[in-house]
Length: 316
Image (cartoon, rainbow, N blue to C red; front, top):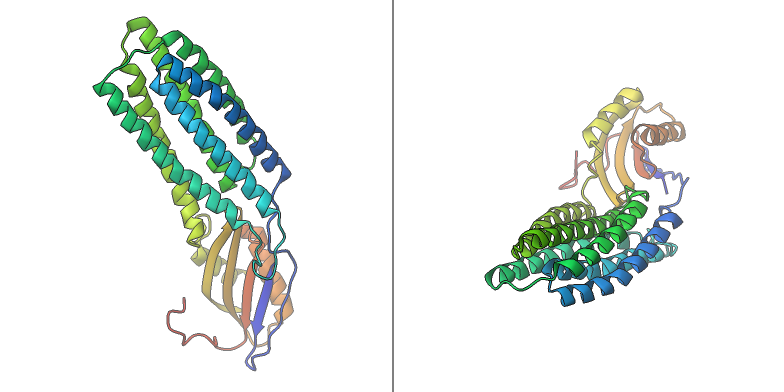
């Protein structure tokens, strides 16, 4: 809800409310996550059995990743369901932050999965085992087809949603795992070199680690209420002062995100004594929306000196 707290020299205040606190969770994103969760979980069982029968670490590692993916997709789907719950007295922003928690959890699990794959690969290099390249190739090819389908479905969804991004990264990891398993099967069939299986598994693990770091960093930044990457607070300040001549100063500026798509901004704005509060407030809100796509701003307008200027730790 965009609103404003305006403070004049005699401490009178006014409020403007013109939109809801909670962003909309799209039915499309929820539906995409659900069907990919079912598809991934179903093939995960087949791939695990195939990995055990063929003796392929690449397949077993990929099925383990798919197991985590199924859980991660289930968590992401549940996050979308939970985010539909309306805001209440105890949670005025609703449950949308659960999406970010789900994304962060998914990222952390990827670190453990990559670590397990690397550990198992080292064991295989020390004590190589026989791998049945034929069944391995067939099962890996089927896994790749499933993963490509899942990737296309999720890639066409909401690209700004961190929860969707986390699910997409898991599917991309599965795709790479399937490609590595196919490559390892072909190498073993042509050369008999069994080390190709664990070595290519390590390559997939390294790529997974890179994606996991990106996801944890982004979702962690949101959970810590860091300033959104696309917002430059000093630029917003300078543009506001240049846009409205009645603005004397902009200070006590803060910005964070409810979700990756929903930035929230608070600020104090000192205006000329003759400036109209309601008119200025509408102009500022319209400017923030048109120039920076900020539709949730809490603005305190001040005719005189800031009442909080003497507070310790206040941002200037």
